[in-house]
Each structure stands twice: as C-alpha cells, then as structure tokens.
Image (tube, rainbow over all chains, first blue to last red; front, side, top):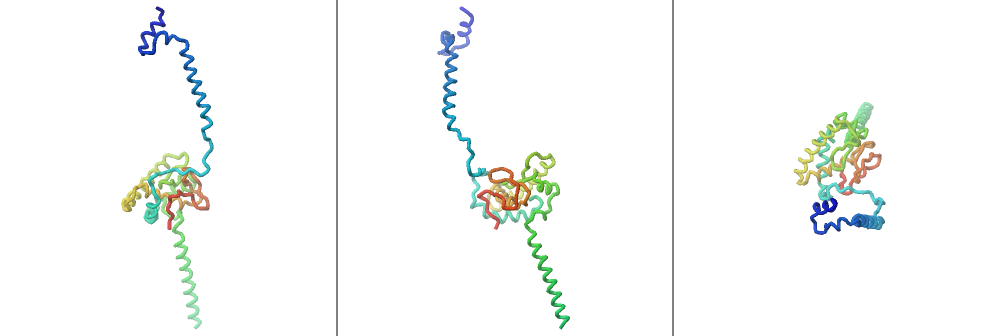
Length: 89
Length: 140
C-alpha cells in the first residue's frame, strides 16, 4: 500500500472518512463551491446594507432608567450643591 | 431750607449708589468666574482641555498631561461624594442626581468652554444656550 493511503486510514476514524472519499480530488472543488455560494449570498445581501446616517442627531442613552419625572425635584438640591461647593464645579 | 434740600439730595445720591451696588452684587451670582476654582482647573476650562460631561462629571478633551488627569480625577471624586450625599437625602440613585447636576452644569458653561452634547460629542459653548439632553429639567 502506498503511504498516502496509510495516512488516510490512521488519521481519520470518522465514518465518512473512507480512503476513497478522502482521496477524491473533488474534495477541493466542493470547498470552492461553498465559497462561491457564500460569495453569491453576500453579493445578494449587500444591497440591504444602509450606509446613510440618520437625519436626527443621535441621543446616547446614558442610563435608560433615568426618568424625567424624577429629575425635576432634584434641581434645587443640585443648584444648592453648586453654591456650597464652588471650587469643584 | 437750603440745608435740608442739600441733605435730601446727598441722601438720595447715597441711596441710589447703594442700590446700584446691591443690584450688581445680585447679578454676579451666575458667572463661573467668581468661584474659588483652582487656577489650573480654571485655565483648563477656559482653553477647552477640560469639559463638562452630561453625566455630571468632568472629562478631558483630547490628550492631556498626567497632572491634568490627576486634577480631573480628584475633582470628579469630590463631585461624586457630594452627589452621593444629596442623592441619599433625596432618595434617588447617584446616577440620577449626577445627571441632573450635569444638566445644570452644562447650562452654566461660559462661551468658549467645552461641554458634551446629547450625542456624546464635545461642543464649544457659544453665546446661545447649550444643547442639553431632552430629559434635563430646567433650572427655575
């Protein structure tokens, strides 16, 4: 037996990995086929990518849980804070 | 008669002058230049290397020296301590109080200073009002 067939027998114990299967030159072309299909899909889907920026300014959600109704009553305390600690503000 | 008139005139002049001084004293509360800020902090604010972030803390605009970074860290730690005390007193989270404080601080930036706009970018304060987050309550 030539050495390549020996290698095939020893390294691949999986079911589909028969010597004749791994010897098949077609193994490489099936890889190419997958690549072609992948490229084709990407090309088809490329039209779906939106590269335009949104019209309105983007608002970063600093903390989604901060609600406006809570904040209005903190204004006085915050103003007081500035008055009492002017050197850090 | 003449003496009384003169007295009244002098008294009126003094009262007017006192009144004018008092009004200017009241008007000067808002501008930030009157505070006891560290000179390094004040100059960094003026030339736009330190800016007000919308979360209520200071940020560095672009690259900064390590001493400036240390200064900003120190000020932010002290800010956070004040926020923690007040947030606890009001029964809100530190983030909520800090956010409100940030709204007020950005609104009181002087023209030329840097602040963070709602989209996260650094903006230079112009003569008009600063752009603040829609959730910001306005100072009454």
